[in-house]
Length: 178
Image (cartoon, rainbow, N blue to C red):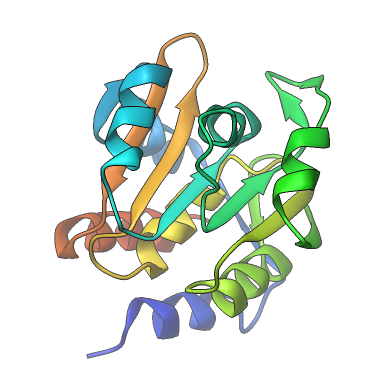
């Protein structure tokens, strides 16, 4: 049986990106865990010793402003397509990798940087383009009990603890992308 990493690598063997289509857009819309307020999210991660990944600027800034530096943060210095000041994020991470990733796609470059840095402490990944779909890759590739959080604009923060069911669900969505 192939691992998630092997299956996703195979998707990128013949192409440089995979992209959202109508079917996968519907599967990704909505909640995939409990929607938390910023305060609830901080309470959750402050009690955990788990590896924490944040996808999105506001989620990352929420953690940083509470004194919690996510192990991996993926951001683009934008929220809801508006530029934001990324100074606090830059200060929190000594190492920041930069990648290109257009909206609605997951590039081979983004996948490679995530896989290379999973498990490392305090790594920032600055995306030129859009980071939204990085959560699905992180879910499919992370170890059990990793906490992955991303923002749901106007609603709050979606946070999930990784288990086999979540990995398999994320992998099935990724494999349905074009």
